[in-house]
Length: 261
Image (cartoon, rainbow, N blue to C red; front, top):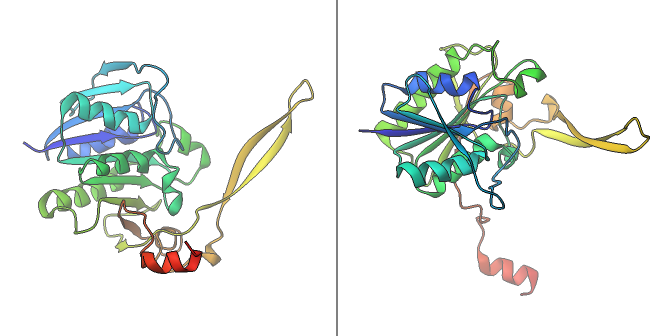
């Protein structure tokens, strides 16, 4: 029996994780382990300095589900320790797109990356939302039907064909307003998604405090062929193949010569 792990970074009560279960429940046994709370932008953080607490919960369509008071990466580690190897790992459906090299910040993408390091074919899937408040909510007002359609399509392909050679993970992004006829574009990662800055404010006692904020890169500087261009300009579903070996594809001896090492 095919065993599928589903996790996320929006938290166990996000409608996106329930949508993922609904999309895949007839493809195998579904195991869900996800954070108890919102953990967006947690990257590959792990909980090493305190014990973890797990709570068994009921999610219709899942064989078993746990809420963990840790990070998305913790959830993958916990699931493997508790239940063994999986045939496929899904992280999402995330509220808000996860694109560019900034996927290393994303808890959604990082959970899929963690599973991939254990040789589990992995898919991170995210849905663009049109209002900022939805990115950190539970998705009450969001229609996940199209994201479910594309998740099932990609997951079935991976389960049937296997992951392509030299590909460890697929990062999928669905544009807001997509339909079942929206084309899929194979893409590479854009360099950046946001231009970050720090906003200073003053608390009631006169002390400064700071928020990290950011604005999305303008469309006119996006490169064709990237995930950002596909979603933001072409309004296509982007599927980006990810390889975990981040070593620069150069001759190492040339690096030695260049750096005089």
